[in-house]
Length: 168
Ligand SMILES: Nc1ncnc2c1ncn2[C@@H]1O[C@H](COP(=O)(O)OP(=O)(O)OP(=O)(O)O)[C@@H](O)[C@H]1O
Ligand SMILES: [Mg+2]
Image (cartoon, rainbow, N blue to C red; front, side, top):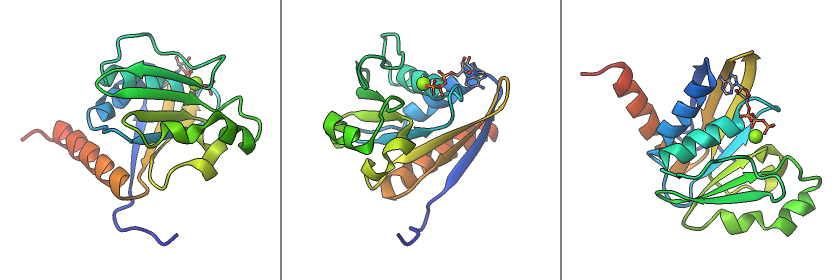
């Protein structure tokens, strides 16, 4: 695929789970129906903490935990939220049987943990949220846009983050 002008990344260092949640909550303000966040990162890197932050930012009032017996939990906030966890997916065929697509093109926001396990089934555009375990409470979080919608989502988030750091 040829690069699309404007593809971009935004890099953060989080020093606590609270900071990770807060970043997720801040991004949530800019989410729209149909947006997909593809979370990638090893066990314990903070994917669920990020999802909890996003849900908080979307005004979900229920407690948010990773789906255990199902692959998806559904919440209702400002928008419907589909929290999908593909950790237990063994083969890509399972992604098809589970019907990932049903959650991707609707009126909700899809937050997918272990999205790298279903990369072939992700939509054309999504925002990657890659988390890296640096130290006990330190994580690197890299947001990466891919196409038109995620580019503008990231641009909006970036502008808001910049405005906060440099108030006029
Ligand atoms: N800066 C940080 N950001 C996020 N989590 C942190 C941070 N520092 C420490 N932690 C701890 O790391 C753990 C992250 O757990 P979490 O369930 O979010 O990870 P996960 O990536 O979803 O793991 P899994 O792959 O098992 O689903 C929590 O115990 C949290 O308290
Ligand atoms: Mg998790």
